[in-house]
Amino acid sequence: MQCAALRSGWPAAYRSGVRDRPDGIDDHEVRDALAAGWGVSNAVVRYMPVGGGSYHWAARAADGTRWFVTVDDLDDKAWLGNTRAAVLDGLRAAMDTAVALRERAGLRFVAAPVPARSGLIVLPLGPRHAIAAFPFLPGASRPFGADLPASLRAGLAMMLAALHKATPALAHPPVARAARVARVALPLRAELDTALGDVGRPWAGGPFSEPARALLTESAPRVRELLAAFDEMAAGVAAATGTYVITHGEPHPGNVLWDGGGAGGMLIDWDTVGLAPPERDLWLIASGDDGDELRRYADATGRPADPAVLAFYKLRWALDDIAAFLVDLRAPHKDTPGAYHAWDALRITIATAGT
Image 1 (cartoon, rainbow, N blue to C red):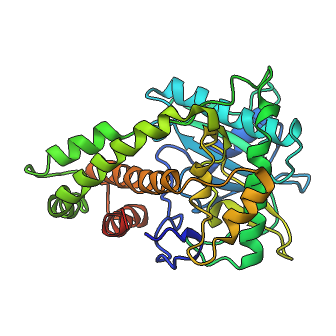
Image 2 (spheres, rainbow, N blue to C red):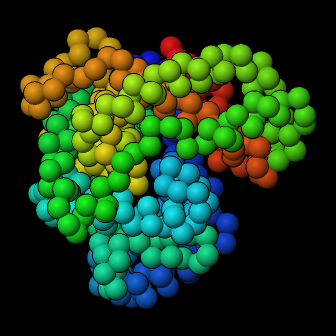
């Protein structure tokens, strides 16, 4: 992994958005939820295997309006909570924040969801999932790690500067609850420690379990060194509460929709939004050559990025991915594109973490 995240040339498979369909959710359930929750009747829905954190459908209503629908697995959002109820509340808080940023702070580049007829932003979809609906937006994103041209890198830097400067707009009710503090600690740290402790016993979750165990067995000393470095760095970052701003959390090329002319963009996927040091976002836009993006950001905000905190969030991202992929590959799974993606991404991330 290179610090020049937008220009690194990572393999397309890495965070490419390969997603298997969620168990127990079909197109009819999504269509019925749109009708009941948002009044979108007789919609034609189509599953879209894109994105890495949610499941997605495109929908066209009977009146011709187009929608983009997200379905989230409440058992697969550890950064939001440890129970389904907590994760649902966290999702609602995150989407409330996105709406506030767009409507109260006037950030038109925030792709915010549409409230349901009940006024809630996110609705339950069965016991394990939740659903939200967005206007269908034109434009195209780039793969994670894509080599963005300078003009788009500059545009993304300016979006993040505007986002971080909008923090005061979230300081008053009714959105104060929504602007949560993003965790500094790894949400799946216990699961990663457990996996490291279980490398001496067979893993029987599925076809990629034993290859993952073999890889972690070989890499365990290095992973433990990275965790030790993370713990040392985290203490200083957690203490720096005075520099917290509202951050997106994952402003990489896959989470930006650019318009046809390339002049403007929309930030999507706000389930990771939270108060944190600016570097939580900035490490993902820092190019490795002239550093122009960070200079533009500093000129716009009056705050230069801290290299040590950039390095911390870069390392945190890698360890968070390693933990998440190991959880997936230790759990019951089959030989599917999604499982292969987790295995391939685990290999890449372990090989490049900390570099």
